[in-house]
Length: 274
Ligand SMILES: Nc1ncnc2c1ncn2[C@@H]1O[C@H](COP(=O)(O)OP(=O)(O)O)[C@@H](O)[C@H]1O
Ligand SMILES: [Mg+2]
Image 1 (cartoon, rainbow, N blue to C red):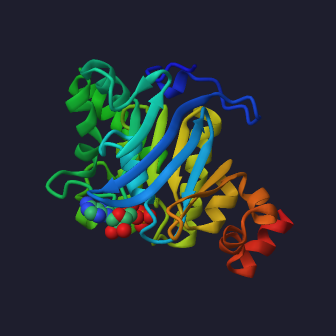
Image 2 (image 1 turned 120 degrees about the vertical axis):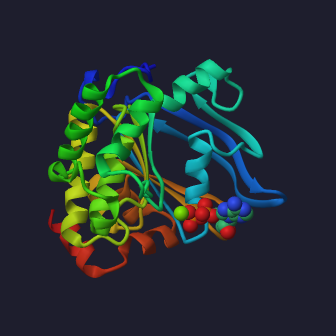
Image 3 (image 1 turned 60 degrees about the vertical axis):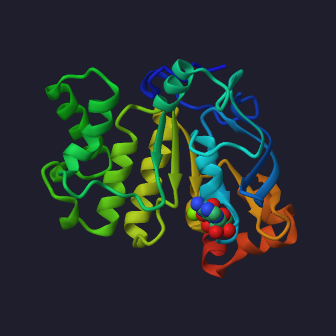
């Protein structure tokens, strides 16, 4: 079992094979708001060093699943296990340590508008570590450079484009060198070039830093370029209907999953040439 508290940078690059260990185990998870079930009976692992994409129709429960994985919403049934620890039954200390090993970019990707971009990225370090001001600044500048925003440390969020704001939110998610990164629709609404840059960044995190990434995405190009596996949540039956490498699911998955993965002949053609 990899140590979740080890900074990602000290981990070995991910080896892509079937011997990867489960980092997180989701067992019999049912998610609900009051008596309304969103998804039921989810059983899957998040493997160490993989990019796991979550997909499914709008409103099927992707963002809700992310909230369950990061400790923000209690399961109606079932468990989210990090190693042997149940995220929702762990004592305060263990839970805080787990939460500190996550980086999260929410769907809205919101930055605090009253702070500069640099201050936004330094905020988690200020709240959760004992780094001093100069260490925080150095680390924030490093993270901003990583997402291609080296020049934006002193900028106000409002002066950035949508794509730049998303990248800044990712820099903030990376602030504490998370070993596990959760991204909710990171490339939605971005132009293709910015989106391609983001894909490269995610590959760098996985391949060079060993970061495990869970990413909600509709973008086929990103899914085929990045995802080791795709988990498909079905809105009608309210449960998962497919889990596997995207190319395999496109060939042999359930019909609706194949359809989802074949939208747009250009993506498909590009993929098949690759
Ligand atoms: N706070 C909430 N209270 C009640 N229902 C919610 C809440 N948040 C989301 N939902 C409902 O849960 C379902 C799943 O939402 P969500 O996880 O945001 O879907 P997705 O991210 O897949 O588009 C939707 O039907 C949505 O309306
Ligand atoms: Mg969502």
